[in-house]
Image (cartoon, rainbow, N blue to C red; front, side):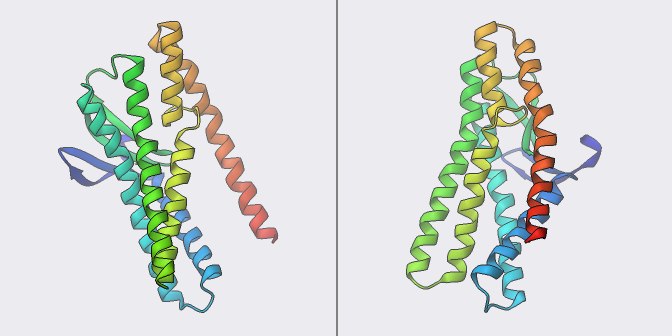
Length: 214
């Protein structure tokens, strides 16, 4: 992971980097946005649609960074020092200095603040889309609507019970509390991540094949 990372910015002393596996996700989001905008706005020029798709991709990146910074901010308040954030295929992961969360409750709080931030962003974007649509600013409304959909999707995806997703961290905290063994809880929750990767790959192939056949 370290060899294929590219630092892009630093916020409040925390480095934000992207991994090579994240770029296909960004391309997928931009491509899906372009396809969706082309269906919603059939009379618009490819240049305008491409600009909207690129704006969606950039805003998607900013939303993910905000999601991860919410994790980092609360983690720092709870004594977990976050050194950097790495965005990769399944979202983002915080790289810490020293110990992880000291209690299951702290782990749950740190894990939940990310999806909560994405839900807040999605709700704000959705409200903005409704306001702009009523003012006939349809292109901007479409952009904000896409961002609302993406952020709510990020929140739901991150709640899947698979490490290193937030849902996996919540599952680990629950297992940690019940067993009293952090390492054992991590091993068990880690199986969710092993099962998620082929499931996501299979789901992506199924969607691609379904769209191709139609």
